[in-house]
Amino acid sequence: MGDLLEVMHAQRACRRFDPDAKVLDADLEQMLEAAVHAPSAENTQPWAFVVVRAERTRAELADWWTQLWKGGGADLVRQRLNDAVLLADLEYGFARGGLAAAPVVVVVCADLDRVDEIYAASSIYPCVQNLLLAAADLGYGACLTTGLTTFGVDHVRQLLALPDTVMPMAAVYIGVPASKLSPPRRRPAASVTYRERFGSPWLKAD
Image (cartoon, rainbow, N blue to C red; front, side):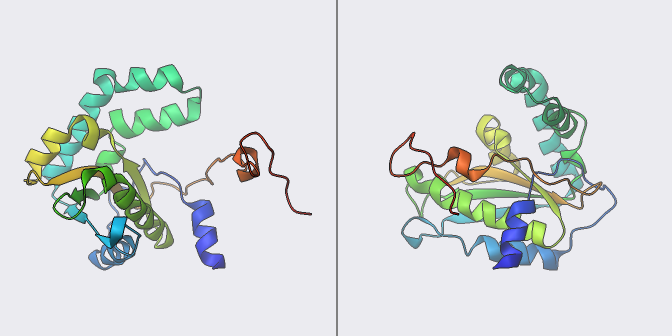
């Protein structure tokens, strides 16, 4: 399990991709196999994946993301984010084409013929996390986004010819990082963990 924990501790969002590097289909298949081994509500396994490689389709998704960002998304983020480094990374990713350089976009959907919509999120996002971890384990960078599937859902549905019963819930951008990713910055688990009841501190074992 040591290798798994190392990948978990190192995995982070990548928004700067090498535009000339490739993602092999064989590696994508490994990522998707990992994804479908996630838990789901009543084992319904309601996921459906649309793997987008076509340059024109990826460009349309990226353009729509940029419109959302410039049309108000950036202002909302600036209001609540007090992290200049992260804000600059978001600006690069959404407004200057960082995510557009990713050679693969995996749109992760919930098939509502298999699961009630109320349970869709609890089934889909564990699968997305498996996908992200598998990408990191194989040496790729990846970024989970939900803006397109929240605010641009009708556009995404039309672009990918999704039926009404298939709901897009996430877009995962995958590629080779433009430079080595730094470790993620995280609060220690003990700082947000309580023993028995909220407010009772978790004291680390001796």
